[in-house]
Image (cartoon, rainbow, N blue to C red):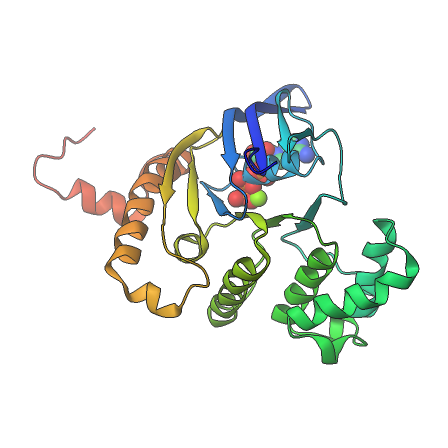
Length: 280
Ligand SMILES: Nc1ncnc2c1ncn2[C@@H]1O[C@H](COP(=O)(O)OP(=O)(O)OP(=O)(O)O)[C@@H](O)[C@H]1O
Ligand SMILES: [Mg+2]
């Protein structure tokens, strides 16, 4: 099985039917995700990143093309093989943290006798053992995200999909959870596909970054980061980190410009004030 990629995305295109017309979101995306790799998807807002993650997770069907996980075709949600951490908080407010995890395990069909141990182990992994009996509203934003991560980890899948999991958090919590995720990756050898709009997060966490174009999203470029996990904050001070971040921004800037519709504000004024700028 090891010669089969963890995830194969083969020539996937997608469009949403929308009222009178259609919204093309993905254009011929082909990509193999290696086993044990953390791969980040980054691209302008609205380009189709969540749609691609939903297609991998079997929640949205591609218009053409297909996805395989461990060599088997995805044709619907597959909680036994793929765990998902959504951007928005999806914990049930009326359940404790522990019950939120137990419900997920029940849904996956895990025998009752096993559920408690698996849930407690996952809570220990994210450092929430002492909060098992709390309700989501009694947790901070960072703790809620850790609880969601614990719920996903408890499923014991080799593949983990994460859609901007830390986006709502303050920067220091976000960095700390990033370090934890990197350590977890090294320990568990999971395959993770993570959508982010943070350049720093993408460079700090990724083995490989996939830069996507403006909608309909196609793959614009791959960036190999080439730093072993677990990653240390000192990596952020290295020349390689800075160069990779600059390279990433240069690639993304063009796509963001297409999305926003040309230069606006300060960037436009700066450009116009340059000698030789032709007035329209
Ligand atoms: N269920 C839907 N029906 C119709 N159009 C949709 C649907 N979901 C998303 N879209 C549209 O498809 C496009 C891609 O959406 P998607 O959520 O995949 O983008 P994204 O790259 O994740 O954006 P963001 O960075 O803002 O999260 C957007 O133009 C969005 O408005
Ligand atoms: Mg999204």
